[in-house]
Image (cartoon, rainbow, N blue to C red):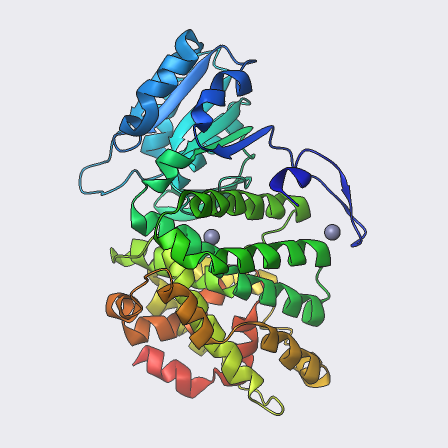
Length: 431
Ligand SMILES: [Zn+2]
Ligand SMILES: [Zn+2]
């Protein structure tokens, strides 16, 4: 089945729901740009958004193809000291300044950040957005969320999916190799996300759709088999990578949940990004962090599933709050409040773990081992030593205990915490 079997139609599903995801045009192929005039025929007042890196890739070509339909142009420039465009108030303001009363489409040229900015501004101004993707770097193209940095904090804003997603193979194949690898690793992370989804369905009775689960699993296996061709930038493999990044992003809309695409490995990647922002420390591209974190969460599953039966540790609220302060600095009260509201610490599910232990282990066994995930990454030329070199053992360990607290989302991190995190472990963090 192709991507087009899953979008722009009602899918009556065995899970009991009817799924739907509308994205009017997804065009990923060689010379895709030539189809721009046809795909955007109904728009006449387009605002084009690009940055200094993406405009030279195809900006002039897009102008040539769309002619007078492009009425406004916004070239985003990086702020002093920043290597990339930051999706913050400054960038939002720059795009808003270029809007007119007549603007009917914001068309971005770029990848994650530009797409998120275009989705964000278009959503709040009740117009549509489109994206000409310049790198197969992450799975957010089709999603309705926009990852923004607002008031210095990373937030996922609820916006809308673009109406057009275009990927021209010639441009995608020439993207920086680090961005291509990042897209590949974002998909490898689905082994972890899917396992967390199934585990949560068992433990929390959370909604689960076998068909979407199978779809994402099939696509993840396919991309895994293409690792070397993706590394070598073979056009057919890069095209498949881009299509599957779009499809998996669309799956989040299909089930109206981030479950098919994001679990403990994404929580860890958010932890590296947020602590990086708090302390001015470096972090990797989103997908790259996800890939490395997938090795970490696979290791946790191995530790847990080796137990014949679970025994449990606890941490006092007081110690936990001290750990929050140590790890999250001024954000700690927000995290405490989020967890108080979520109530997972107040309502442990230890009895359910005990009762369903055989099923828990069976689900954890479905996830590839840490060694297998490591091989998937090295097949695409990842240097595994860079992960620990960048973050150090302690920071990684702190994330294993407390990345889960950034979200109200169950994952294997909660199970691992319930079994292994006690006062002794917390003392190491606080030392
Ligand atoms: Zn379903
Ligand atoms: Zn991701």
